[in-house]
Image (cartoon, rainbow, N blue to C red; front, side, top):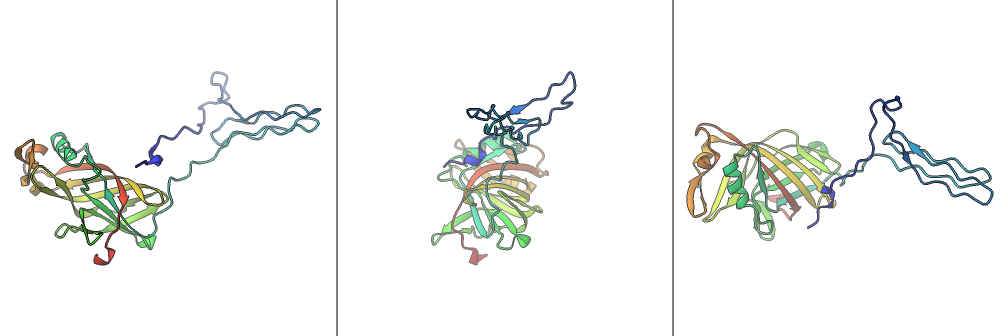
Length: 262
């Protein structure tokens, strides 16, 4: 599914340092020239020395049309602010630094298929943006609606809502990530969870990044990789007594969610 709002944006202009000095020429953007009438001179081109767009060219003597300056202004947000209740379910996921490399490769391997793997869902409650809350944890389908997996319910935290974006205003204390490995599910508890989501399609889609801390107690949990049983701690490395950081990146789509069950 296309996520057009993630395409790179073209540069829209910048101030040149020392513009106008003898050794630092200004970069001048020109608008289209005015069209001359029978007796009128061609209108002057619009010019700009900043990223805000050129002024209009002057009218030609005898009635020539004005030349237009380059369009300026700020780039509009990709989406409106998400006002209401939403559930954004991950369509696959990639684990990135600072996740320990061996663990990141294993978790990404089991989360790669966007059609079948849904390791986490972001639930946003923002009917009143001033009181918005957000939480992340795995969900499962129950009677045609997603619900948090029993026993893996997260703790909600305050959220900040902006045009085309929402973030956790404070870290989420506790949640989970579910990864289906070769013989079953690994439900990895995470804490100090921060969420940053850029939305599109009237809040129908989101690009989400999550950074969290895995408690040391999770190191003993097992998973099967390439036919061999290993532990989270063995893949993460480091001291058995130490917590460690993980980061996730994923595309998400809104799904029907049973908000009445919260």
